[in-house]
Each structure stands twice: as structure tokens, then as C-alpha cells.
Amino acid sequence: MFVYADNAATTAMSKAAIDAMTPAMHQLYGNPSSLHQKGREANYALMDARETVARCLNAQPREIYFTGCGTESDNWAITEGARLGAEQGKKHIISDAIEHHAVLHTLAKLEKQGFEVTYLPVHEDGLVRLDELAAAIRPDTCLVTIMFSNNEIGTIQPIREIGALCRERGVLFHTDAVQAVGHLPIDVAADNIDMLSLSGHKFHAPKGVGALYCKRSVPIRNFIEGGAQERGRRGGTEAIPAILAMAAAMKDSCEHMEENMARVSAMRDKLIDGLSKIPRSRCNGSPDHRAPGIVSFCFEGIEGESLLLRLDLAGICASSGSACTSGSLDPSHVLLALGMPHEIAHGSLRLSLCEYNTMEEVEYILQQVPEVVRTLREMSPVWSHMLETMADPYQ
Amino acid sequence: MAMEYSEKVMEHFAHPHNVGTLEDANGVGEVGNAKCGDIMRMYLKISDDEIIEDVKFQTFGCASAIATSSIATDMIKGRPLKDALTLTNKAVVEALDGLPAVKIHCSVLAEQAVKAAVADYYKRKGVPFESPCDQCGGEGCCGHDHGGEE
Image (cartoon, rainbow over all chains, first blue to last red; front, side):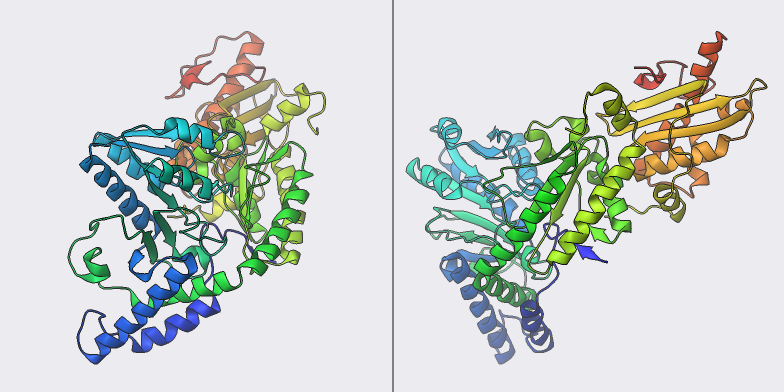
């Protein structure tokens, strides 16, 4: 059996996306900036796509900027949020410890340029606390950037409340919603969001296209210079086929959101129940505020890369936050921020599902994972040591 | 940017040789630490005429840590003890048809684990032993604790 359970890394394209993209590749080759009929044709299609994306987020079309990826959107929003603050002499930013590197690396760069960044702790459940955020906001705070839902553990932050607090205190609020768009209901107006980053390939659009929502009242400037595209804010000829596919995929995901959430959550809960039966295992992140498709576990006594590759041999595609899979010496910064010791964080496994997965696949995963964990533990000196020193390691 | 393992590495990872413990081992060595994500423990049974009669390993670590342990045991099993002392991480890498650059440390660990077990054998016999390993200065080398006891 083959099971793709790495949908937080990327997704397969949906029929809706392919159906929108294919004719665009054949026919809509005009440059939307051209005045002739082929250009106008492409431009109309682009306008439609912008309207669709805006509608899915309850935004205005003029508040949507198409970008190359979620990372670009994050870089742009944060850099501009910081610049706008600095113009008023405000150089303090608030974020949290479990953001994606697209955010963390941008913040690190700003720190080198003289900005000060407060990283809120997320506690064992992965959640930012509102009172801690309120206490961290200072007169010179210009930007709060907190992700909608986490890519590794699936924890959903209290975005609406965070947004309300930021608005009350007059601070700009950006959210990296790369893992949330297309999977969770989002209403930028009701959720008090000023800027939001999204990425197409996380909800069945192709790779290489994303968007930034930026509220009309926020005067962001160009991140990429060189043309009048995106109302002069983002140079570069628009990737029409990819943008159209993203709009179609987003519309499709939003129209079927309720049923998809119910279906995927049921599979997620079955996975969590089943994997919890493995001795010395733990499910990471908040049990109550969890994205429908993301399951994150740690298994003591084994290392994540071998777990991942053994599962791959069994036909299951998953991912891990172990140091070996991240190519660094430390395991995932997200798991460490939850207070997990290094040796346990090395044994992490992330399974991420979408509506294309089936209960049969979940059952297959539940047959394979305990078997692989057992085999790897049998050859692990760490596990042997636990067996020797603990009264009952199976508890 | 996926890492590419050789077929040989995958073969030893999927079906490692000499996994387990040896009740009657007379040399046991352990290197690495769980915080870094790699621990190897080697068990040697060495005969009176200093032939490695049997060898087993236990490894906590990634695919290449398991594969290097497995092939290192193959390379010394049934061989004279002096062969274990001249085993190099380079030879381990070559026997596996190469390792990704970020995984070379696994082969170093395999070499050190074998040598730590040999050092333990000599220690038990009360024979002074100086490790010929380039990276190691004998017991406690490389910042790792040798010997299977701790």
C-alpha cells in the first residue's frame, strides 16, 4: 500500500486546480500588462482570480497581492511592518518561539538592523497566552506576527483575540496562515488581521505561487522592484496559470471546508487514538486547538530519521523533526519550545492528512508505525537502558 | 534537497547485520549521546588467541548510524583483533559506497565504537592500551564516555 501522509509539506494538485491551469497554459499566454487583446484576456482572468481569493478571505480584491510563495509573503509583510514602525520611531516586534523559519529568519535579519524582537513562550500545549502578549506590548511595539496554525504540531493560535488585542493597542498584526488557508475558516475582517501570508501548494494549488493580504489602510511598499504589476507593489510578470489554479483550488477548498474538516478530523483522531497505544509515546501540541490534518508524536528510545525511512520502505510518506532530517545538530525548534528534551524530540514523527486520504490508509499506518517503532527499539541501546532502569517502561 | 543514500546504506539500514547484545562479551564500548541523536554500543567476544569470534551492536540513530554500525561489525567479525584496531571510518564509508557529507560523523562513530569496545577488552585484562585511532586518545576521547557501564 502507498500512503501520502505529508500534506503539511505539500499537497497533490486538485482537479479544480488542474482544470483551471491547463487551458490557461494553452491559451492565456498574453502578458496582463499588454494593451492588446491577448494581454487584456490574461488581465481579466487575473482580476477574476484576485476576486476569488479575496472573497475566500472576506477581503477586498485590491488587498490581495500575488507572490511567488508563502515565504516571500512572510518576508514582505514583516519587513514592511518593521519599516512602517521604524518611520514612527517604533522598533519593537513581538512573535513567538514556534514560527516557521520564513518568519524567524526575517526577524533575525531585522534584529541585526537594530530592531528588538520578543519571542513569546508557547508552553507545553504550543499556545501563545493572551495575557503574556498584552504584557509584552510596549509603546514602541510596531508589529505582532503570530502564525495561524503550526506546521509541525498543528496547534491553532487564538488569532481573533490576538488581532483584537493588537487593534486595541494600535499595533499592526500579521499572521503566517500558510498551514491554515484552505483548511480552516478565515475571515480577515472578523479575525482582526492586518496582513496575512498564504501559499498555494498547501491547499492543492501548484508550487511557486502564494499571496499576501494587506489591509488597505496599511501603506506597504515594494519588496520586488521593477514593474507596475500588483498595483506597482510587486514587480515581475504574473504567473497566470499558477495564480488561476490557486484561485480555483482555494474556492474549491473553501466551498468544501466543513465536510473536509469533519472527514480529516475523524481520520486524525483515529490516528491519535491508535498511536497513543504505543508505550512511551506522546502526542505533541494542544489537544483542543488542533488543525484537522496534523498529527505529531514522539516515541522515546528511537530516532526520527530511521523511523521515517522505515515507514518509507513500507510505502508511507511522513516527516520528522529530528536533527538528522533537518540537516542541523538540533532537533525541531518547535518541539524544543514545548519544553521537550533533545533526546525525545529526536524521535518525532509528523503525519499530515488531507481529504484525499482514506480510513483504510489510516488503518495501514496504524499497523505499520507500531511495528517499525518496535523494531527500532529492539536495536536501540537507549531503549535497552530504559528497560533496565525503569520499573515499567511500558507505562 | 533530499539526501541520497547509496543502495548499500539502505540495504544495511533495512536489514542490519549482527543486531543485538552478547551475554558473554568481553569487550563492550559505547559512544555518542542521546542529546545529539546518535548512540552506538558494540559488544565483542574475543578469543584467547585474539580473534573476534562474535560481535553485536545496538544503535540509536539515523539510517546511516544503523548502516555504519552494521557494516563495521561485518568488517571485523571473525578477524584478528588487530584488524579492529586498524579499522578506519574511511574504510567504513567506502564499504557503504559512500555517505552524504553531513553523515560522515556516523562512520567516525562506528570506528570509535569498535575501538571503545577493544579498549574495554584490554582494560578488563589489565593490559595497558593506547588507541591508535587518529581522532581518539583512548578512553574518554572525543568527549564521549567509553565503556558500556555508564
